[in-house]
Each structure stands twice: as structure tokens, then as C-alpha cells.
Image (spheres, rainbow, N blue to C red):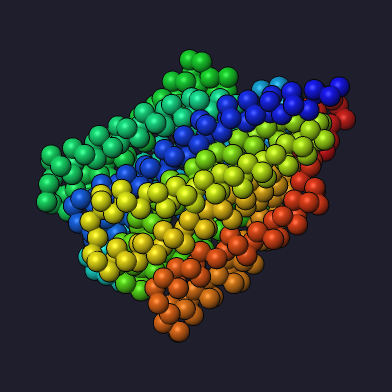
Length: 462
């Protein structure tokens, strides 16, 4: 059968990109939600933009919990989707949604009660603390909506319903941008304090409308519905599986994202100009790697589906193709960062020092994107899809907390290295992790079927 391999490749490409493009679009939307607030407030003042960027680190930390829960549930959801077991998927949505809502409520309470305390962790600049607290307090009301909507959208992606996720998120982003424009240019021009609060309220409105869209989709045409999980023996078994595969993934995201938050705090205590430059560089970098993230997430769904069917050899072949795609899209992302330099400098108002920092940061980001793409597909895609989620946790713990953060602290506060050298040290984590990720990939320990047969009396974990 000489033509079978090309046919399989074409079929895989169609399946992959039918997932990748909507997921990449939703990743783009997710990156733009807080980025739109940051960039648009750049038209008000550099301080307002920098403060909102730092306050956004709190939302970023909460998003890490959503990502961990979505990935942990998605590992099992996609494998059960391969078996067409929608009843178990319904239970998994209830489990993940319950955990997500509890975490969201905790973040909401802390942000409402202690916004200034949180901002002081990131900076000692009084103006940035004041603007950041003004933004964070109203923004926290969006967390209650996100606790449900983000998990629902994540499960929709895992059952190959990524188009709905992309559509509802895109519509709410456009609404958010439109409201931001009214707040900044019509209602409160030249009033940074009022504009910051209004932009936060605009984001809250968009998030609650997103949740309403998820609820209507669930009730009217969703294959899975939003409701509380039942309490029975099957649910207890599923809870053990959920925790077994979710906790390492969640730990990985917290370890990695927590380290990024600490590096943002390090930058925040170096200089306001460096904070402003990093605010813009982070937006550009996040926008550039959306396709890389789409390949990682879409590939993980397909790998999980085939593993759930027991097609391990096919999953292995797909893994090889995903590695090749990740390298290609990593190079594209790096080129995109460099291509965005001209429009970024034309749009954003920065001091001459901040512009100099930003130019150097974007050059570093362009190289960073290549390693980031490869690690995203392996550590955040293939490995968790097959249940090998502990590797990412230990890899990020050692690299981020054992190498990058200590070096960043020494460079910033002991050796007083130039700001761009500090940024290069902060960005070295993906290159340090890459050899270990490739080595782990070649061991193929990530090829595992994780599903249970709940219809059998002798059901047991794979």
C-alpha cells in the first residue's frame, strides 16, 4: 500500500489544522484581552500602561490555574472523546468547573480586599501602585465569570469544538476593545485614573457576556452541559484520575508562571522604563507565538484521541510530525516579532530609554520564540496528552527556580548588569529546557492510554 502514508498525512493535516486555527485564534484573543488594555492605555500615559501590565500579572496567575485545570481535564476529555464516552466527559467538566470556581472566588476576595498590597510586590513606584490598584479592584469581578467560561471553552476544544470557543472569545474581545476605545478617547480623555477604572469595567462586562454565551451554548446546542457533578462511586474513581493527571500539570503551570511573575517583579524594581519596555515586549511575544500554542494544543487533542482509541503507533507518528511543525512555526514566530517592530514603535509612546530597551528585548524575543515553540509542543502538548505530566513540573522547577531566578536576582541586585543583559538571563529558560525535552520525547514514555472502561464490572485504570 504505497499511497497509504501520504493519505494518512493529509488526513492528519486536515484534522490538525481544523483544530490549530481556531485554537490559535482563541490563544490570540486570550493574549489580546489584557494586551488590549495595556496597549490602549499607552495612549493615556506610560505610567498607566505599565501599572496595568503589572496588575495583569495577577490575572496571568489565575489564568495559569485555568490552563492547568483545562489541560488536566483535557487530557482525559480528549481520550474519552476518542472512545465517544460523552457521559464521562460531562462528569469531568463538572469536576474541573467546581475546582475552577473555588480558585476564582479566592482570587476575587484577595484582589478586592488587598489590591495595593499585591501591587507592592511588583513595584515600589507609588504612581504605578496607585494606578494598578485602581485597575485590579474592579477587574476582580471578571474572575467569577472566567471561573466557569474558561473551563467550558477548554473542554469544547478538547472535543474538537474549537470553532465555538474561538467565535465567542473573538466577539467578546471586539466588544472589549470597543468599550476601551470609548473609555479612553470619548469618556475620559486625558484622565488616567478614570480611564484605568473604566477599562477594567469594560473587561468585566466582556467576560460576563462571554459566560452568558457559554451558558446559552450549553443549554441550546452544546454536547456537554454546565451542571454540578453527581456524587457516586464512578465519580470518586474519576476524581482520583482527574487529580492524578491534573495536579502535576497544575503544578507545572504554577511553577513556570510563578517564576515569570517573580521575574516581572524583579524588572519592576529595576526601573520604570524597563517595566514599560517589558510591557510592550510581552504583548508582542505573546501575539507572535499564538500559532505555536495552537499547534501544541491541537496536537495534544489529537494525540489524546488516538491514545484513547489504543492507536499508539499512530500517535507516535503524529508526534514526529508535530515536532517538525513546531520548529517551522517557531521560526515564523521569531520573524513575526522582528516584523512587528516598525508598527509597534509607531503606535506606542515610550521614553527614548524605554524605546532602546524595547528594541533589544524584541531581538531577544525573536530567538526565544524558536525554543519556546519546541518546548510548547513537547512539554505542554505531547507529554501531558499521554499522562507524562510530571516531567514538565520537575523540569520547570529545576530550570526556573534553581537556575533562572537566582541568576536574575544576582544580575539585578548584586552584579547590577545592564538591563538588556538581565532580560537575556530571564529569557534563557526555554533554551536550558530544550535538550531535556528532546531527550524525554525520544524515550516515548508519553504514549499511554489513560481511560477507564466504566461499562465493565472489572474496570480499572490503564
